Length: 115
Image (cartoon, rainbow, N blue to C red; front, top):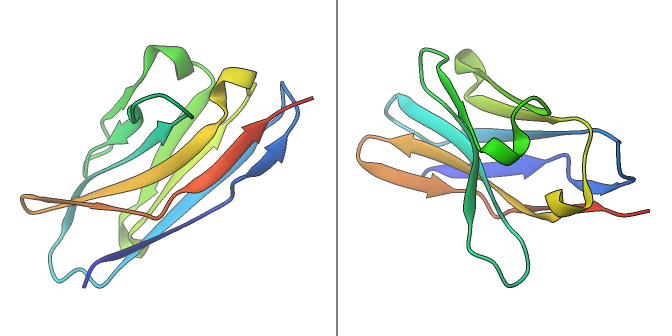
């Protein structure tokens, strides 16, 4: 059974940084795309960043230039480096792993940006 375990969330002041990590285990097949989504209270889940197997990346306009997604294929891990955090970045962040035709999600990690 495919499992995703996220870590790295927490409380940070505006302008600060956090690094999220997600480890995928239990997959019998290669992981295709990996990504991060977020959901703020009262809002729909939205794409933050996505990275393909070959390293091509895609970012939400709101995080371009501030967030960087990366992955380690040998370790089935994806990271999200978040810099210059803003109040609007407060949300639960979810890791995504695409295996075959299925999407798998992590349980979410809370990121709170507050002064």
